[in-house]
Image 1 (cartoon, rainbow, N blue to C red):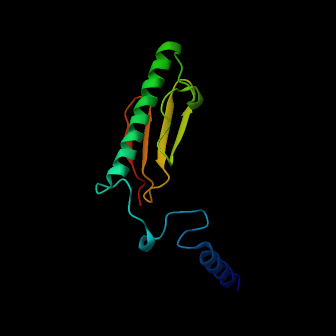
Image 2: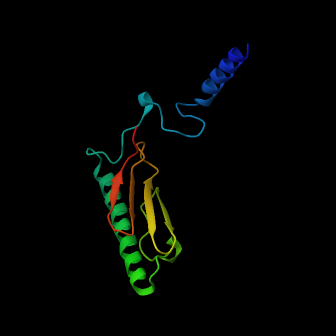
Image 3: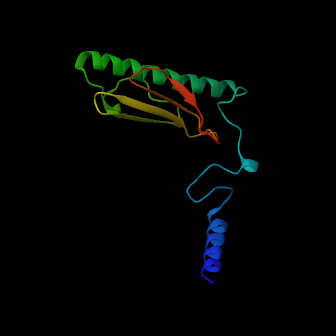
Length: 131
């Protein structure tokens, strides 16, 4: 009896949690409804320009952090950095403990969750999550 009740509750939760092709927590759309990746090789010129602007922002962050570290021997939080803001709908998250830093620029428009990230090593990476 208890197993049947648990199975019914799980079925109800799964049925209710899918709303418009999305789970309650806002996970990726289902495969059948997924929008194209904005940062794919066939991206529009406007999207490629936006992506390059985000990469330039990442370079500026690394350059500014290196400059500040050279002067003060400490990496600084995002609020202390000068430079261009990220492109529209890219979200910048930077963390530092003073001795290291890491940041990501995530594209909120991209159905494939494209992101750019880097740290104190100065190497810029780009990618999408595993599916």
